[in-house]
Image (tube, rainbow, N blue to C red; front, side, top):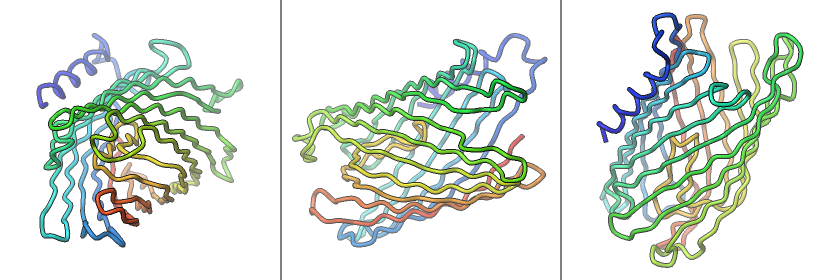
Length: 296
């Protein structure tokens, strides 16, 4: 896996062009720490996760994103689950097609969970965006679709196909009032051999909506989703839910502050309901995440 990530990185950086010395390299790096609480669970006690993230590019056309995560879950029978996630993503804006961003990536799982250990996700996203017709030609809206294929073949050989249409609309942008955006995302998830892995249905549908508000150095986010999800891929391929838990909806929110030196401090909270399939019990999962990032 290390060789795969290295190859992806070298390929993406090479695409920045032969005249790399003439380009200005920009990026963002961040460290995330999360605590997970499972209210009402008869199986899980608690969990925590850490993630390192790096985004780097020429600020114009090419961008590479890398992520490495570690998750630890403690069960009530004193057993534990330890998992490591690796993600590599390349995006091209306006280079392949004007007013389009195309994203290609992969995610790999190394886990104690026998069903999904060695699992991988390959994905592609194509997004069309529109800018305002007058100077400064700021972002106006976008619409696109993501396609995700996850393969799990260590014990039960099955796959998960996910189709994710999405859109972002700028509701307003004003120097005095700030800027407000509406994000909407749909999820269609198909799981093969669902009866063999004990989840019942093969097809799952859900809808997510969120508002993002930016004012000065502050940013705020609030959102929620309804429907059903299992083995979902989220956050542009950086989060893969690989346990047999059927999620049934949730809410989330966050606040961040960016200092003048480029540092950003943020707090995010999400609350999701899911069913533990093996014991047929409803659980409320609450995740609190603190992150520290730096833009360069």
